[in-house]
Length: 390
Image (cartoon, rainbow, N blue to C red; front, side):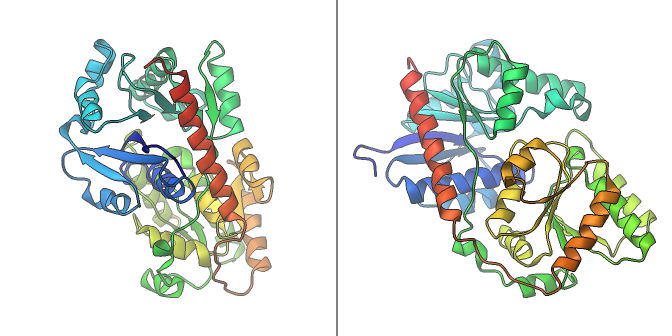
């Protein structure tokens, strides 16, 4: 418990429809800080003047969190001033009005003249490792953003050892203070209120299904799952994969529609079921009752869906990424991102290993992992404040 006034930390809203993982990350961070560092921080979430009420309401319900809506935080607002003049004046004025002590930048740059200690979160360096997944303008915009944050001497926050190695490789001259904060989550009681049997019935799913809660970005690699299901169909093995998440990908418009057309052309409509964006309580209900979670992604910074599955002890079938192995300590079934046969074999074995349906609860050791997440974040903020000349 802090003995002085809480430090007021500025965050900007990450819309769930654009990046559910980022939205969930921040929401879980606020819950963790409230629980394990009560009275030490006040997260102040800044959002546009209108249109984000559905995302803001759950965050506003978290103890200690404040919400501020202003036109200064509309999409794209202030970026030109931040780059040309060194400061997003409108945002800085809001920070001053709200007595902000430090700023957390996530996909947002407020200028090198920002008069506050600032932590820049680099969730991953995907645009460097897989540049072909980004339109040229989007790739250069992301790279320019990272470079100006590095040049502005931000404290850099990364999510994994894998991301730290990438950062040192791609920015070897960076002298910034770098902090690694591994995300962990402990689902709230409110999000556990949905009855898994009722949710399964609502979506007309079979009793046994695999769950893939990744939004439809191309690098999330849903394709290998459909290829695996095609192989299983040819073998006469009936497996159902349930997917949920946003279908919006500004880097690849039309991708979801093309993908689902291929699902239909292969006759897999009953084997690959997409539910769209669903409430977080339904995500947790489906996780608790699934045979296993699948994450076939070609790249991750630190997978939110894997963390959520780990919190319930859900069996994991994951692409063979360094970060997936780091995140699970190797306790998963792994397959190459272009190995549908291996994935198909894993699906069969997982089905055989788990014959009876089950509803899982939060694993006992999860509280310690969330406490460590909160402590590492708190330490990052304090380091940024100590290093700042502001």
